[in-house]
Length: 466
Ligand code: URP
Ligand code: ZN
Ligand code: ZN
Ligand code: ZN
Image 1 (spheres, rainbow, N blue to C red):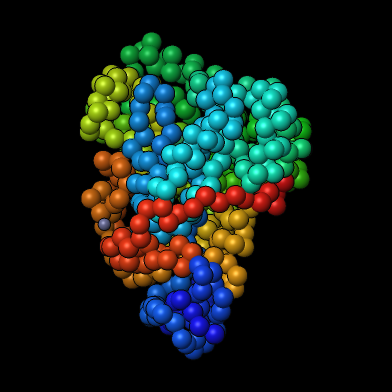
Image 2 (cartoon, helix red, strand yellow):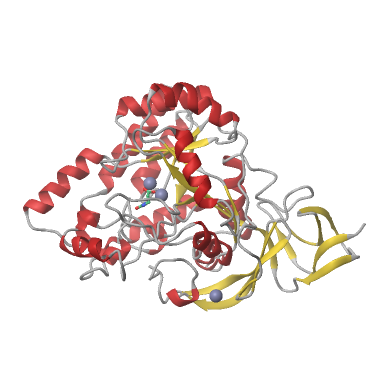
């Protein structure tokens, strides 16, 4: 047998095993795993490195308008470049349906944004904001057949959220269509009430973003989403869970027999509401929804990653700049937290944080790291076993990790379009030192090797959960 590439002397790590062997790659796929493979155009020496499936980040926002004319800091080029430098080989951004438009129109616009721009593979979830009978009756079933097999609905944000009857109708259509539904759970009416009260009291600083979105608003909406899903017998994913009470809702729903997946993100392990308590725009840089909570919530989220409450660890990368032509918005955001765009960057730091804080500090093992960062995303969203593992027949989407490499996170080592990282100064042990997408090296050390356009669009199978 001859190969395009052989990876030698590394330790292969999958969601279930860790073992030593060589990996033989041809035409972008893994075609052999054995000792002493020979005969390749390129031999990569992975001595001292882990050979892991490339990260799959199933929750990122790229080039998505945020209302108010605010432009997101990453397009598909910079966002997928940053993803690759962070050890990822696939990302799943959102395609936002504008009210009054169809899902097909939305997809056309986002495909145009992504076409020829990507450094890693991509696949869209569709955000449904206008669930008309055409959308739910005609479009969704046809889109699932075309490989668009997941959607997201919002219970918060004035312009995006669906009411309970709309959520029920959407879930009902998802069940018959075979789509998996991700739900953003926060009680919009409660949040509007609390924002109004803060404004009446002149409490306008960034920190009030957190107090206007309390745990109870997330817990209540999580319970409601799970109840609505149970009523129409539809599996759902509860995304970006921030605290124990919302986790307990997931656990209780599972105990009742519901099919539900759970996701948490780095911000809920590493940040707290105190980070929003800073002057001017420094606090704004930590504004995301749900907001980061407190030290006890961080402990709870780690437990959830350990005990299976969470299947997914995603970034919810949603980058904004605070230094330039977003200036007008910044002026508004400085005056009142309600105008601060929601979201923080994190696609490049997700995996190093989970590796260093999780594996390095003994909270999770290497197999759980791979499951949470790659394999479970591929499985849940219909890409497995093409993606998400190191196995014969799988795409050669591989990240080589140096478990001893020390890096201090600063914004200037990152490749995203944001002008800051919420993790500035965080010391990390363990970093991806080479990243390959379908057998092609994209990143080697600090160096970008590939051209943009290498990443392709992935149609997906139905989720096994539905
Ligand atoms: O604040 C956040 N999370 N922004 C991104 C949009 C979303 O809700 O996921
Ligand atoms: Zn959300
Ligand atoms: Zn998000
Ligand atoms: Zn660099």
